[in-house]
Image 1 (cartoon, helix red, strand yellow):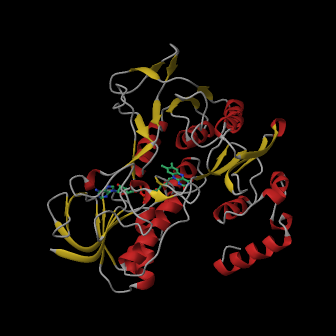
Image 2 (cartoon, rainbow, N blue to C red; image 1 turned 135 degrees about the vertical axis):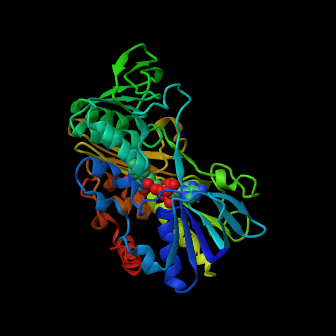
Amino acid sequence: MNKFNYLIIGNSAGAVGCIEGLRSIDKKGKIGLVSEESHHVYSRALIPYYLDGKIDREKLYYRPLDFYDRAGVTLFMGKKAVTIDVEKREVELSGGERLGYGKLLLATGGKPIFPPISGLDKQNVFSFHSYSDLQGIEETLETAQNVVVLGGGVIGLMAAEVLKRRGLSVYVIELADRVLAPVLDETASRLVEKAFQKAGVKIFLNNTIQHVHGTHFVESLTLKDGSTIPCDLLIVGVGVAPRVELVEGTGIEVKRGIMVDKTMQTSVPNIYACGDCAVNYNFVTGEIQPLPLWPNAYLGGRTAAFNMAGVEREYTLGTSMNAMHFFDLNIINAGLNVTEKNAGNWKIVQCLDESNNLYRKFVLSDDGALKGYILVGQINRAGIFLNLMRRKIDVREFEQELLDENFGYSKLPAQLRWQLLKEDVILGVV
Ligand SMILES: Cc1cc2nc3c(=O)[nH]c(=O)nc-3n(C[C@H](O)[C@H](O)[C@H](O)COP(=O)(O)OP(=O)(O)OC[C@H]3O[C@@H](n4cnc5c(N)ncnc54)[C@H](O)[C@@H]3O)c2cc1C
């Protein structure tokens, strides 16, 4: 039986973060990696760019093709890890092979959710998540004219935008009364909807699919409101659930994902988890919760690596954050999505120039710390706001400056400016 000092399940952001973290401190330890997908590691975030023709296939790869060789990683590609024996410290792969481990990282990611609507198993229905989705979508696009996207969240809208840009008729169906409801407020959602409408994408709100018509392929859909729309390609983008089936029966605690502490260790010693399959510490809320984002997966994996190799580290830099662009509209949000209705004692500082699609909103807690922000249109220097939020700086003294499109370090009180710049230079941020 092959035995590894470090065994990683999954082959994406979390896995790469872990390998790079391990090799920065342990050059010799044996690393094994099990990947159900047989492709070289790629960036899911680049799938829309590839479909848009902005990058070629090779650019989808997250690391050069010789990455694993150079890092001395033994690969088990196209193999699924099916069980973990936590007593013997062994993992069984599809096909029966068993691998021993000293430390184990679970970086199994997320799986797209398919709502219980009959007919979503037809051949022209895909999620927008993986390389194989991409291949299926590309093939279907050879003849497709009408695309329906189920879900008006970040991933659904990414798919809708790129397919509209390719000249197709695109329809988005969203259950809520606005798009991007979990991450944006009503004002920002309306600006995004306007951008889609202007581009000719039809959005159906408060709606869902009632009937899927067609035998092997979807041909048309009847919606809850009774309207019928043609459909040659159906993309399901209603969200991603943590992939936790591998830990069932192991005693590893699962709540809204695999539970980990700040060192990324699970409730079972020697087993770590990171990325979309796990929860993360959110520095804004102080809670442990899912934060399914690429940087969180990478840094969670890197943090796990240090601890797996015996160097204590904590990952506390994660929060909810999205950088999006739809047609010519740029949007960034981070932290909590607070509205006037649920703000309580907190203060909202905002400005809107609807005719120019400009919107800025900042949420301040009672002690003046930034708890969340939304920028639409002008998103320059958004990193500074993240920095202020991370450091819990009281921003009340310069809160109106936050609304200035040209906000930058120069707008901060001198003492704070020098403190932040000094710390950022030390951290290599600027
Ligand atoms: C279209 C799209 C755009 C996105 N854009 C952004 C963005 O702009 N910014 C951002 O921060 N995030 C973005 N994300 C989210 C980001 O891609 C994820 O947060 C990130 O991929 C999570 O990485 P991960 O390592 O947790 O796992 P994943 O990327 O989900 O990969 C997990 C891997 O593990 C494998 N696996 C699972 N179970 C097993 C098993 N039992 N045995 C073997 N292998 C297994 C899976 O097949 C998969 O290859 C986007 C996602 C998508 C789909």
